Picture (cartoon, rainbow, N blue to C red):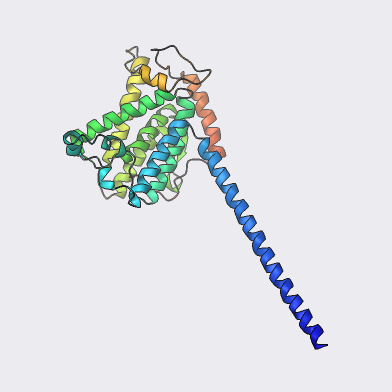
Length: 294
């Protein structure tokens, strides 16, 4: 009788060990499947980004994270003008636009960069990648000039999002956006509200990089849209080498040397309505309790 009890006890323990191993195995399989699903969703989202937006986002993330974990010396990424023109460290003219400090503002910058750059690339510059690249190159050059003349900032990463945001706000001027505490206003005021908020949040420090971004984007918009609309010359035509490097998408081809014509007022209003519908569907532009773009 005792032998039977011992045998039953051993069988019971074996079954318990088997069930525990089976549950652990099932849990591992489930976790692996969940991780695979998350990875697939991330890759699908990442690969679905427009090319210029993807490049901006990737460059910013790689340089910032690499400098944060000391894979790259951050001092070699900053915009130090004597090193640029005396030692010809020309890469600083580029890396200074994509180097951030880790923090909540960095996460918000990535979000806004993705949001507004995607809107520009898929709406305003739809099928015209070369034009978008030219816009970024021109505005970056203006920002470097302003920085060399006035402030000599170590990084100009704070100018990238305001540049993109300003041009978007001019093309979707009447679209309603929501800021902190439910404050609503037209999109055309968004860059200035951001600049004002940064000024107050920093205790009265002038947000030079944000102002550089606004000024350079306004200069581009004036030369590209306002001046030609008043009968003036078209000063900004995308260079041929950029058009060859980034050819127009199918259905939006234009003859070489011919500048891109911005949508008419009616087309812009239609785009605004479509964008407003997408924005409402996603819950609107909400900044929650607020943050500072640096």
